[in-house]
Length: 208
Ligand code: AP5
Ligand code: ZN
Image 1 (cartoon, rainbow, N blue to C red):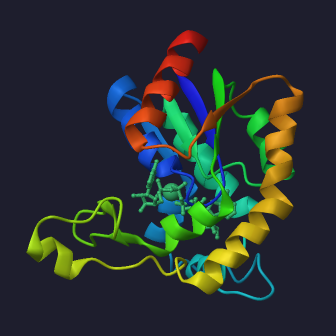
Image 2 (tube, rainbow, N blue to C red):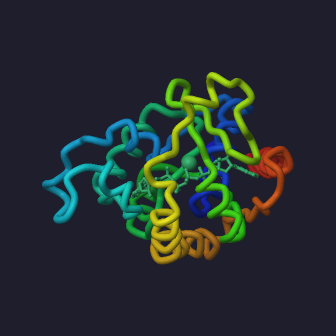
């Protein structure tokens, strides 16, 4: 299947994408991970204020469309089935995607704002495996792992607030865009990961 997963920062896009990848044996195309892997890339020629994706992400702003669209274009060329996570983030990107591929299903995870802040500020990453944890919901059991966990640069409270604002301004219209096409499947993401997953799997299976 060709799946798009939408939702605000912290909604569980990465968590649920991991399950989709495993269950359907498809590619995970995620602009956020791709940009984190290329944090120091020189993009000063396409941005007036910042020199690298790392600086833009730490501020909670959007990386220029041409940079992320090139990432997605390249990844799509290699993928048969996929789950796309983190793109499109504005209408221009949604229109660019239209020319690149068809989608079988568009999922949107709904989660309350208080819960998003709680999930993001409590998220921790294992720098050795990239495994994602949460201090309260999903703590690391192993002491050695626990000690090496780090926070994502953009998960500070200040940047989280800005990311949520940028989402409302730029990405909420993308949700409308797909809703108007009649292709949006809303999922209550304010439940345990396992429950959210069960519903996602059913919706995808009935869409393909
Ligand atoms: P990106 O990496 O895409 O971040 P995001 O959209 O802000 O989303 P997150 O990764 O923070 O959250 P998620 O929904 O994946 O949640 P997760 O599953 O990890 O983008 C980062 C930055 O890159 C952007 O700000 C921008 O600068 C740039 N960028 C990326 N794409 C771009 C684009 N297209 N255009 C321009 N710029 C772009 O879960 C979060 C936490 O909650 C975890 O700790 C997890 O364990 C926990 N959790 C998950 N599900 C549940 C649950 N059901 N119950 C309880 N806890 C849960
Ligand atoms: Zn993510």
